[in-house]
Amino acid sequence: MEGTEGTQQPHLVLANKLFLLTHSDVDDIQKVRLREEVISTVLADDMAPLYETLAANSVLELDQKVLDSMRVKIAEELKKLDEKIADAEENLGESEVREAHLAKSLFYIRIADKEKALEQLKITEGKTVAVGQRMDLVFYTLQMAFFYMDFDLVSRSIDKAKNLFEEGGDWERKNRLKVYEGLYCMSTRNFKKAADLFLDSISTFTTYEIFPYDTFIFYTVLASIISLDRVSLKQKVVDAPEILTVISKIPYLSEFLNSLYECQYKSFFSAFAGITEHIKLDRYLHPHFRFYMREIRTVVYSQFLESYKSVTIEAMAKAFGVTVDFIDLELSRFIAAGKLHCKIDKVAGVLETNRPDAKNALYQATIKQGDFLLNRIQKLSRVIDL
Image (cartoon, rainbow, N blue to C red; front, side):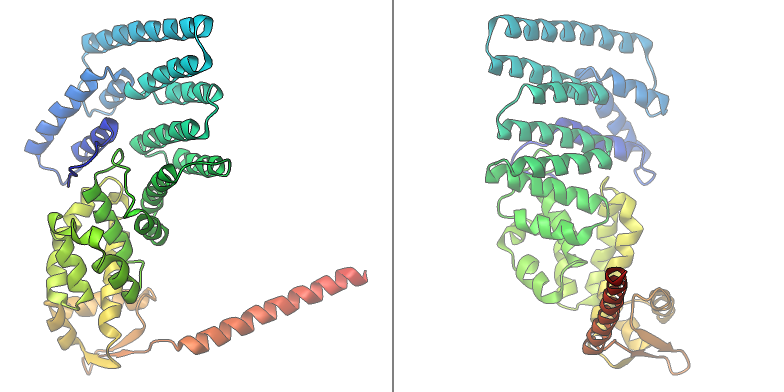
């Protein structure tokens, strides 16, 4: 899935190749090509720190001459950058000094020296006054954090960006931050918030540096399917013009979304099998593969059972195009986990739904909260009496 607009940050393209290079489902022929592309990128950008790490992890073979050559080039470039900083501090103004420090920060990012890049970005921030420019430094940090999948750094950077926006900030950068935060939420299994943030950004998307627009739509649809109710899904996703213009370019995604909404369960399971391969090979979604597969099946089974008070297992199996034994095993797991509100009558071969009464649940919750409040008031009255 590649977009036609904007350019993805080269380091994030490299990060995806490194992920695929170590993935068990990628065939050996493709890994040979990926290894050549990774080596080419590492050498082109003199990424000595990354080269050493990859060699230590047996991803690449260490060539000491190549490593020494990269270190010499890095030392020469750093000398030039330090000379520019010294010249700017002696002869030029504050903006030139900041630009010289920024150039050094970007150089450390380019060679994948994370610790020194973070130190230099902090120095550059000290030389920066404008809120917009300080926000740009946060975006550089976020890109680097996603390269290393350092979610603690991502979280701290997002909080920092939000604090900066309290001082002011333009809408374009605020919308960009929503996409970064959405990716963070999706990568940490908060699909509901990710869906909300992605849908808010869908008409103003300009964040091509972290992923192409096609990939953004792919993430938006996947997060929305397990997060939104049926009415919201129709309004915000199924009929969204921004999604309709792109979704057919992404294999299986249109069928996956529309067959679910239109209750065409055989088609859904067919598309479901195809879409799983995309999720497996996505570096942000791969850690949540089993969780997502479980959630989407909960959604589709719940949707099917919503229409019935009782239904035969055979009829459900036929609707999904699978065997009775498969459905029986699947549902028993979800029922035991509390994901589906129904019970299986194995003798009669029937599923009986026992959906909880929403009004009764609300009444019980109100009573429980009332009891809790009364207990708190009683404790407070005792303290006051003392």
